[in-house]
Each structure stands twice: as structure tokens, then as C-alpha cells.
Image (cartoon, rainbow, N blue to C red):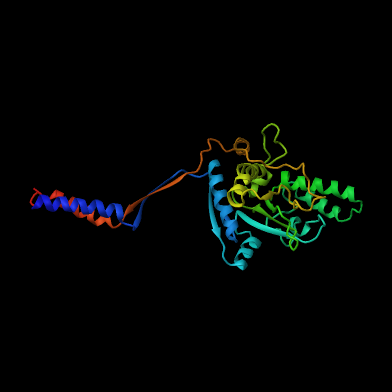
Length: 306
């Protein structure tokens, strides 16, 4: 009788272990990240981008905590107060003027990035913006804003441009997405803005710029476009929308996905032996747990199961 009872108990135990739907966290194993950063998003689409970006940046050792801020006012407050490291943002331009001082000038209302005239090249960008609005010759103005775009994308890097819609929206013709960097993030801000690289060929860049360049090269916008939009969106490479065609600089630095380049910039910034960030979790059935406890207690008792 005891043998049959034991056999039945073992069968029931296996049954509960397999079919129990309730789980409890038991162990967590993860590699030590190079840094932990917060990425905020507002829309569901931007949340999807954020999760994919987190996957991609794990390959260079970064742990990205993605947060969807559900209330627009709270999201705007986080942007205005710099309460983020990375943020998915949409800008909409309804005019055809390339002057974006309201976004990229130190005093700009939408300067969520923290651009100022103290950081390297910040004063140069400000001067170019101030001069640009005074230029009347259209060709001269075009070349002037080409130079400004290159400074923003290569030498300040407050953003990684993302997408413009392939089909122009007549109501919002210059709406485009971008990944915003908070320039005062603890990972690349502070004194990192003023420590120049010693790596040959990179002496005109700082540690701060090198880290953000690594992030830009690591993110694969083509993959994100294919995954979520079936490759129907146009990848933007400039702070100026692709649809502001006359002023959009086609030959700008494009940050095509290149992991080797990303690692090279991180090494130039002083990071060595970089390993991908990995996190794994082990779960166990909470329903089966008391049964296993009873089982082993009974196995220890020689008077019951002999």
C-alpha cells in the first residue's frame, strides 16, 4: 500500500510541476553592464523602438531600462527637466526654413538635450545658427546649413535621427522621429565633455562624443524599419527632415550600423574588455514547491515509505 501511495504521489508531483501556471522567481544571473541607462518613450511605436534599441545596445555591454510614460504632460516634464538618458522624440516642422534654433540653440524651447556654448563645438553651432537666419543668398544659405548639420551630427551628437515617413503627410509634412541624448547623462556627461581622445585620428573628439558615437553605430535603424514598418519609412540622417529637400545634406555622416566601429569608439574612450550584456532568469513552480517539500520529508522517514 505504501509503495502504491508513493507511486501515486510521484505521478501527481510530476503532473503539478508540468501543468502549474503559477511561478516564482528563484535566481537571476546577469553579466555586469558597462552602464545602465534609462530610455523613455511616449507612444506605443516608440516603445517598440526602445525595446529593440535595448536589445541592440546590449551587444556593446549596455543595459537599457525602457519606460513608457503614459501621460503626455509627464513625458514632456521628463524631457524639459532632463530626467532621462535617452528618449524617443518626434519633431514636426510646418515651415520650409532650415533654422532650427528653437530645438538646437542653447535657449531653444525644445532643446531637451542640454546643448550649450560651454561644451566643445556648442559655441560653433550657436554661431552658425545665428548667422544662418541673416543669409539671403539661397545657395550660400544651403551650404551654410550643410556645415551646421555636419557639426551637430559629428561633433555634438545630441541626437541619432530615425525616420521620416516615406509618404509625405500634407498636414505635417516635416514630421520625423529621433533618439535624443541627454548630454548631461552621468555616463557621458560632466568632465567627459572636456577630456580629449589620444587615439590617432580621433584627437578632435572627446570621451563624451566617443561614447555617443559608439551608441549611434551600434543601433541598427534598418532592422528597426524592417521589423516595424516593413521598410516603408525613410531613414533620416540629419537634424533637418529628409523632406526639407533643398537643405537636407545628403553627404552627411550617416552612422550606418557597424559593431566594429562601435567597439573602436568605446575603446578610444577608455573602455576595455567589453562584453555583451546578458540577463537570464530562472523560475520555479510555486504550486509544486510544497509538494516537493512533502515528498522529500516522507522519503527521509523510514516508517512511511518502505
